[in-house]
Amino acid sequence: MNIPAMKSAVVSISACLFLVAGCVSQNEVATIDNRLSELEVRNAESRKKSEAIKSDLQNREGEEQALRHQAATLRQQVAALNDEIRTLTGRIEELEFSIGRQKQKEAEATGNKQARLDQLADSTRMNDERIGKIEQYLNFEASQPAAATGQTKAKIVPVTKVTKEISEDEIYRQAKQAFDQGDSDAARKKFKELIERYPKSERADNAQFWIGEIYYREKWYEKAILEYQKVIENYPKGNKVPASLLKQGFAFLNLGDKANSRLILQELIKKYPKTNEAKIAKDKLKDFK
Image 1 (cartoon, one colour):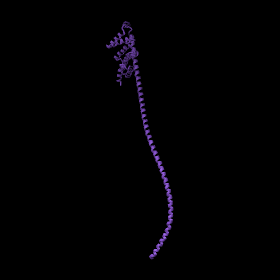
Image 2 (tube, rainbow, N blue to C red):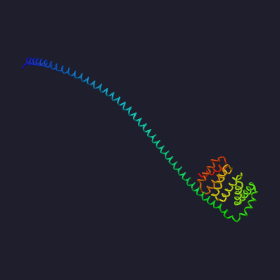
Image 3 (cartoon, rainbow, N blue to C red):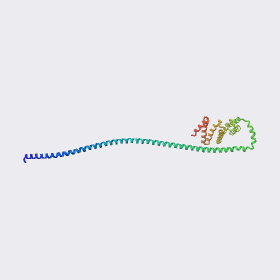
Image 4 (cartoon, one colour):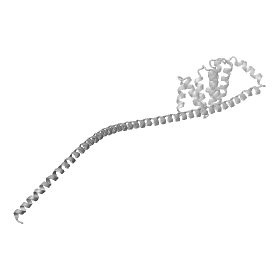
């Protein structure tokens, strides 16, 4: 085939191809346009949905943030309440412990008081028994002279008549002189004589006190306690009551009875606080501690 013919054929084929291509492109373009329109519609719908979802997510994020804020606030409030509860619990425990200690102290104090009362009751009972025995002994002692002096009665009467002439001052002087000289029997006899002959004498309470002193000097402390008690009971307004209480306390102490000794010395301090005897009693009580 010659060149011109080939060129003609090529041109013809190209023209045909161009015509065919033109027909195909128009159909495809229409199809593509339709698809593009559909895609644009879908894209618009997708954007709307996306925006709606985004808006919903934003709303949810706002709600979640608000919820998180509320949750954080609640956690803070709960933590504060827990701290307050722990504080209150600690205070309650402290109060319970304090109340328990107080009850324990009260129970111990009550027990100590009861034990002290029981001890004092026992001491008082023992003291009463001791005094009862002493009194029984004294009654027996007092009855002996009456039974044994039947034959000497006639001799004693003249002596009594003579002693009636002696004044109370003279009897007291003789008794005190005998006491100072250490003649306990003569002094005791004279002091008793003064009390019997002049029971309302101003020296009667002194005489009774010196009788107690005689027994105290003889270390017969039980008898001394009873004689001092006569001063307290028979001459309550006399000036020898504080001294009698003091010596009673010392007598009980010498007998080993600290409980009664303490009680009597405390009674002395309470009733006669401004006396020298009270001062001596206070000093003595310091040795008890």
